Image (cartoon, rainbow, N blue to C red; front, side):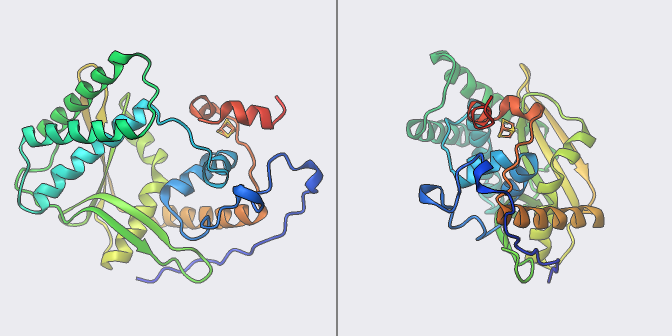
Length: 289
Ligand code: SF4
C-alpha cells in the first residue's frame, strides 16, 4: 500500500538566539543524529503532549530512573508476549512456566536498572501484584485457548512517502481477521471513549503499519487493560478500524512534528500532565521559575 502525504517544508528559526531558553541541539553532546531517521507512535505522542518534554527525552536524552509502574508494566507485557508467542507456535506455556518467566525476567531487569521502590518490601508486593493481574487476565480475556494469533510482537516499518521518515512500530498482537490488540496496565479503569481518545495517535500509527504490511484494512482495535486494583480487573475496549479523520489528523501531526523539529520549537505545554513529568524541576528551572 502506498501512502502519500504533503511534504513538510523545513523553515529557518526566526527567534533571536539571544532569547533561546534551551541549549542548541545541533551542538555538542546534545546533537541527535537519528531524530529524523524514523517516526514512532511514542515519539509522536510525546511531541503531542509537550514539545519541551520531547526535547528532554529525545534531544538531550536525559536519563531518568525507571518508574515502578513502568517497570511493572514492562514485565507484564513480556509475559503476555511469551504467552501469545507460545500459542502462535502451537506450544502453549503452562501457568508455572509463565510465572517462572516473570520471576526470571524481573530479576534480570531489576539487576540492570535503578527502580526507586519506596521501601524494600514494595518490590515483593509489586511482583505478586503483577502475577495476580496476569492470572486475572488469563482467566478473563476473550481469546479462546485454541485461537491462534495472526501475529505477535509484529515489527513493521512503513513508508510514508517522499520527504517523510518511515514509521516504525511493534504491534503487540494481531487476532485472526486483522484485529489489532494493544496491552495496557493501569492503576484505574479507563472509560471506553477516553481510552480511545488518549490512544488515538498510537492506534492510527498501528493501522498504518498493519495496512502497509498486509495490504488489508484492519477490522478494528482492542485495548486490553490490566487494572492494578486490590482485586485486579480486566477491561477490554473494542473499536472499529481507523477512520479517515484519524488518518488525516495523524498526518497533520507528522507535518507539525517535522516542521517543529526543523524550527527547534521546544515550546513547553504546562498542564495536568506535568504532575507526572520526569523533568518538572528542570523545566521550571529552564523557565526561570
Ligand atoms: S513539566 Fe510540563 S511543560 Fe515542562 S517539560 Fe514536563 S510536561 Fe512539558
